[in-house]
Length: 198
Ligand SMILES: Nc1nc2c(ncn2[C@@H]2O[C@H](COP(=O)(O)OP(=O)(O)OP(=O)(O)O)[C@@H](O)[C@H]2O)c(=O)[nH]1
Ligand SMILES: [Zn+2]
Image (cartoon, rainbow, N blue to C red):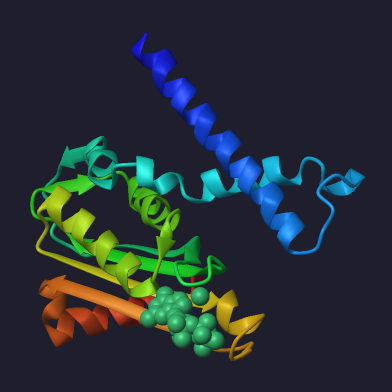
């Protein structure tokens, strides 16, 4: 019974979105009834729900679901994790790569879970700076490590296809905690994320 109620609520949200996108198309001067656009409001609704599904996800639960006791004290880096998010100012995509490192303190997590955390926070309306610190905080809180580092390099379509129209600028944001606040650890991390696989 409770499940049915939730389903009903979700259906209402989807139909509300579809109606809104149909109206938006009309306000933008389009004819939402023409052949190519008839299903477009439904497609946009689905796409937007997919791209914002991170609100329903719990990054800490994901990291904890594959948390293993392990006596490793070396830096673990997962680099070049591709990400797609949407800026909260224009709802236009920004996309790029995240590089994440942590130094365990008795616990490690599944490598894929680190990449999943990027999706949890990317699939929301974001600013790159907040995305960076949310990823860091989730890892810090779940694994209680000795240090965490997150670097994100991204291109923002709101700066490319509109507004200032700069095609080549890349924004880099970073957040460091614990051991990574030491220059030496941080520079080892920076060196390792810049190196290419042979
Ligand atoms: N700090 C930060 N700014 C962002 C991000 N994504 C988009 N922005 C910026 O958000 C700002 C919003 O500024 P406004 O002046 O309110 O909006 P606008 O008139 O559309 O600005 P322009 O893009 O300069 O045309 C712009 O400078 C965007 O470049 C982000 O992830 N982080
Ligand atoms: Zn923007």
